[in-house]
Image 1 (cartoon, helix red, strand yellow):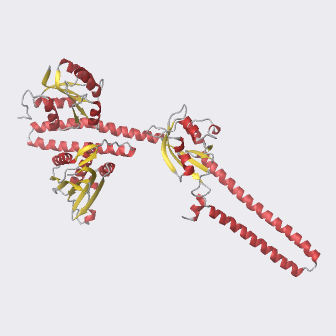
Image 2 (image 1 turned 90 degrees about the horizontal axis):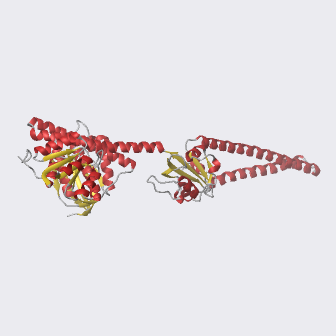
Image 3 (image 1 turned 45 degrees about the horizontal axis):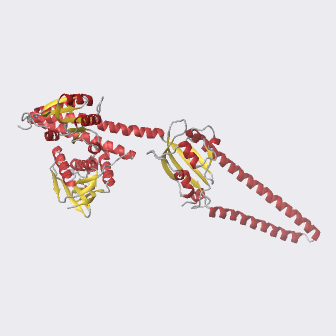
Length: 427
Length: 130
């Protein structure tokens, strides 16, 4: 770690070294002065009375000089400290985030104007001396899920004993004011690394508007995903109706309509899931899922939607997994769709359900498209063809949320996307 | 008395009602339509259908309310198939109970006909059977 950083986080050994260096320099300079001036004095003057007077004058001069040096150094240091204090105070006063300083008795010693405004109190004195239990009673500090944060779990309390900085999101309910969503961090000022903090600095960043926008975005995605399903149903059903009674030309067109409806539906589904993942509200409803019918159904569905590829479904095992069936359907659709879009025209796509140790594995293999004159490693893969990587990201997160793993590997001109899930029973 | 070929389609979207009505009519079923839960309850009171295809998100009276009302009045005599765009509708239907089937939007025509054929009988073969 660079010396400057060590100095900034407060390393007592360095402080002691600097102080010792100053003292040693003073002792050497002082001793040298006494010794050399005495030598000079004894060489020039031989009268003992005169020598005594000179020594008294020399001592007085030494005291005067060191007094002046002490005065200059102290004045400079105090001026620097005062300037630093004023700078810190100006920063604290002007900063838009709420800053609380807690003393070793774990109560609030100082609150900047932003935190006074954020907490809806009239003046600093209303917060000074306030401990965590009282703060909890007044502001009902809660996690985002609505449960109360125990006072001993406040970051500003934990960081007295734990290494910081610690961070979390919480909601404050100032009396008579609107709720405030904050991202709160805290760090301790310690006499030595690893020791209990003397002072804690806690910073509250108001993220109410951001959280509100995030919630609005999630609601927009949810309502859009929901609302788009009815028109898609009408378009699909009407197309299928036309296909049932129409000519072969009409049937070809209706197949295209059907295919595009599926793509719209899949894109909306992935955007909805992405939004849930980002906001941490993705929920799984696990149940016992037999993978054979699911893989068969989705393989057959995707085969019906692909005009350029034969999708071969191979069922080499009969695994059951603990999973959310709807989400598993989504990841299978995404993976097969990605493979068909990245595969060279007419190339076969194989979906193989097998076992790998105690896991169930769905492996989707395809031959990636060849690009003219480019090296093989620059060939496009499934990720390049899914909508800006959304489908791949969503698929990976969902597979991992089921305790599984997603990998992609290309060997000898064949790319294989593997999804492994912990299986409950494999035949 | 239950009309074994009568299918009641309940959805607030007139296009969806129309397309489902056309598919089922051409497949040989007798079809009635309702635009919300309240209309559905009144339609069932006039004549018990073989099955109710019930959307969930509707004005006036939503699907869950309508399903509870029909169960309270007729018990399990009127099969209810929930037709919904909501996620995890089957899990919710299982929690509530009294729901015979769930058809998720967007559905395939074959899925629609397969579900309806479980509860209703055709009055004529229809185009899908010919």
